[in-house]
Length: 146
Length: 146
DNA sequence: ACCCTAACTTTAATTCTTTTGCAATAATCT
DNA sequence: AGATTATTGCAAAAGAATTAAAGTTAGGGT
Image 1 (tube, rainbow over the protein chains, first blue to last red):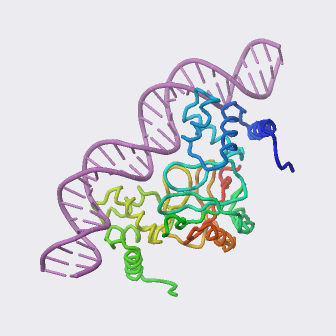
Image 2: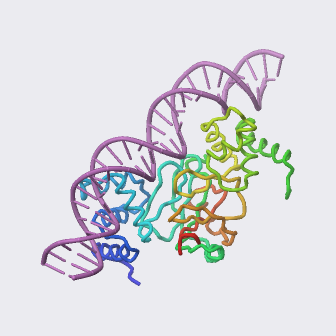
Image 3: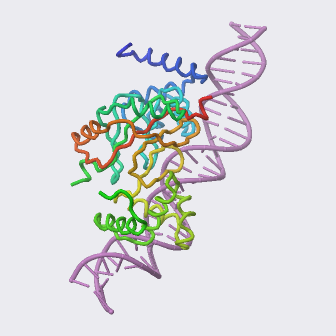
């Protein structure tokens, strides 16, 4: 169970994960994945586009979305269900959850706390093949409830 | 702690909740809330518009969205973070969570399983005033993983 | 190692959802 | 009841995500 991977290892690991799922390991997808890891936060597709512009001069938004979709199915990206405005993505799965402010829409990380095993068991009972679960806390962030 | 409320009680309870938060209890909001309760499932704004058409002939989509926003802040409606396409709403908080299929986007209910107390405690530790939490399971629904 | 096929990227445009501005309306407070 | 002020309704626009068509590229087979 490797803890820290070099950029090169991350790269080939991502490529392997894509091929395993029957996807082609294109440079666009790998660069999007790298950008997601490097940014290490929640980003919109548009921000991602800006982040990869220097490495992929001709990428466009549809490619970002297409890449994210492939990465998501390969388990290399996660769509954060913020619920407001543009969708957010991160390089999950990582060990934290999200708190979404219902006033300003801010998305903050919440350290892992709950045991999700029983919920995953419930999901599989209804025929759902879960590959992850996330807790979304809703309420008011520190800036909004004063 | 009332268990079952008559429609009239639900109505006045919703009105009280709105006023408590400083919102006006307009008929549009109350009808939207009622429709949400009656439908008892995840609906898009457009479906909600169709559902209230007979009771509010002149409502328009912007009003539905505005009403949902007010209801959400009053804790009378919940935006389900499905993450794909149009936002879904339900009359939550109710005792179930959601499983989102990453292939077809279907949203299914998952019986409550996890203890969320520790996650809520984590959230309050970072200054977040939580009024609810929801588990979003992601993976493949029964129809998609065959 | 090369070619072929299917998949992918690109560009442009489109579709669909959601928000905004302003006049008219309706709900709350005195 | 009357005044005040948020909210609705309508039109239009902004914004996000997808689609279509054409060209390009990756990966499997020979």
